[in-house]
Image 1 (cartoon, helix red, strand yellow):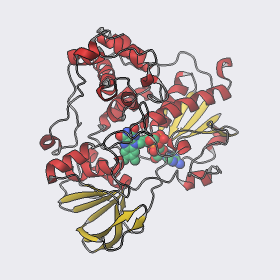
Image 2 (image 1 turned 90 degrees about the horizontal axis):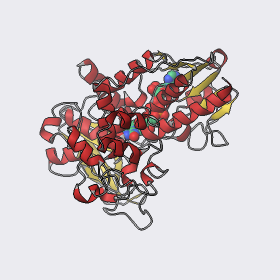
Image 3 (image 1 turned 180 degrees about the horizontal axis):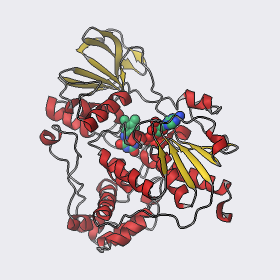
Image 4 (image 1 turned 30 degrees about the vertical axis):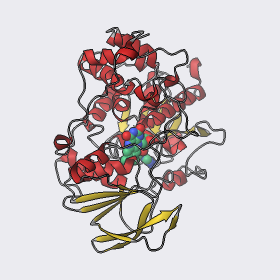
Length: 453
Ligand SMILES: Cc1cc2nc3c(=O)[nH]c(=O)nc-3n(C[C@H](O)[C@H](O)[C@H](O)COP(=O)(O)OP(=O)(O)OC[C@H]3O[C@@H](n4cnc5c(N)ncnc54)[C@H](O)[C@@H]3O)c2cc1C
């Protein structure tokens, strides 16, 4: 176990943010990585608990062997630590940047938890730097062909594992670049797009084929031995007023960053109102500030969460407490106050303005209307399931949450058709969709003949 007294001697120190003034000038990464000594010291704090909740269902959906690789990292055995990490984590360079780190909230050290996410990121980036990450080309091929529809984290994880198991995998993606929401959704400052491209190139070198700009048609069920539908759940919740959907706005922003041109939806010099106080809304706030908006507010229907855990939300559950994310911190820096306005929604849109109203539960409170400036309204009010068009074309019935969840709760829809990721579960997290993609890959592998192959 790390250093027996490590957690008593050494304080938790996260990778610090670049300061706001600098990071608001560009779309580069948010954090400053720390050197090797600092990482080893942080890893030494792991207590190797009898019951490591960090790697349990409460902590890591991938069941990463966190105490084991923290111990190896502490001892300076980075390469072995990375190998241990890669046994369960397909793409630590993504989770090491964007995971909310459920494992840290489940850590026995609670508020003083291990910095697992930063440690994970250090291991994988060290691996890339030192050339330890090389294409792993399967020695045997099964002769079975699998199509994976969608190249988000679930599709990539599914394709990666099926390829390792020797199947011939083709990823079919309608967008011009692979990655799903990793590419067009999560902003560049949280996940630089070169990092996504690096992984796609590695997978190509390992034998996975990517067909971009290609809409998946149902005929593929005849052309391939198995098909995994991993098309995500991006159908947005609509409002009674018009506005741009958050993912469309964030996609346009990323396209502009990648091409060096002006975004097709631009917040420059505009008063921006983001409807939705969650993580997607926060990404819109951070992006609008970088584009040079005149002001930004974020409306949230629900009351502000409590600062401390409530009695009905004990450790090691994910804490439903107030979090102030990077975009909101940047708004506080730029505007002097938190952009979030709670228990409030939009009543109507006026020229250059919006009328808001306070809510009690979901009911508007008469007389609480307010007018605020608004030149650009961004709707980040959540998602209501996967696209109906794909479901209709593949003749799959959606469940009440708008997802392709088979009745037995698994991944097998019918005949040679499977589903995974947000398309199966509804909008979730990168780490959950990675785990779901891998689980689907194992189900497909077994269905194709498993070990017998
Ligand atoms: C703005 C935003 C920010 C987020 N930030 C975070 C974060 O910081 N951390 C985190 O853990 N989670 C985050 N999430 C959630 C996370 O991104 C998703 O849970 C995850 O990407 C889901 O992966 P997926 O593979 O199931 O689907 P997606 O990533 O949605 O990928 C689906 C892909 O399928 C393609 N596709 C769909 N239908 C077809 C078809 N018929 N033919 C061909 N291609 C098709 C789509 O073009 C898309 O590329 C965020 C979500 C959003 C919207």
